[in-house]
Image (cartoon, rainbow, N blue to C red):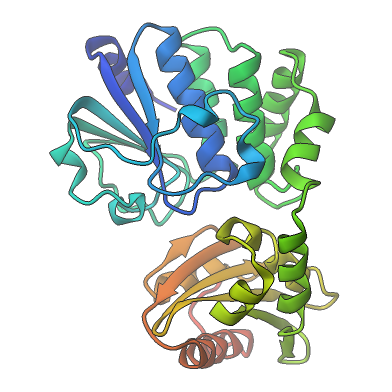
Length: 323
């Protein structure tokens, strides 16, 4: 990976905003905090901005309390992490309104290349893996940065259970443990703490579980009514799709999340051979080989019908989304 252009920018400018997508996950929060801390360590004026609520489970990470929800000023450089397109960052205006230079660092193959500098490594397990290599050449990785990077990598790889787990990311995790990271501590914070509201959400969501195509497709639907009844937050929906994906015989799992009368977020996961990233692209979304998503501006029932029909056709050999 060639980071020479980025290194020149970091050396030549002073004010930075580090940001990522709305509805942030562990990779986005961990990488944003790690990069912000690293820039601060080398004397830069850097702030983290995420235009959405930060999930409670990441509050233990250094700098999480300092993440700003809004930014309307000017800076020299905006660094976008883990975001495939500019709109998903949630800023009201184009990024060039706020900064002279836009740096785009991502691992999604569907990235729209919206930066002045684009560092896209779609073979990387996570953005945390990419910026580990950048940070280690900038400054020493202390425990605070190490915990952020570790969180970034383990959340996007499912604790090294998913197919995007690479020898490189495993070696990085080992090095971060040598820096003092306690895997059991981080796992408890990220994977083993649930509110009663999130448990209620799981219970209600699983009542919507349906199987199709000889049990090769499983879907779960989270309606606005379910969200209201459970009292859960958006962050509590994280991981629910895995209940569908883990059913024996299922190849494609789909999570439908109703966000308005005509707005549905769709998440896809696959197990063995389906490239769900290409399926999501067909609906205007994108992502990875085994995990992707899209947003559909239509009622939930219509979204379910369209998506399920496409996935069924693919599994029947009629689709163009071959791995």
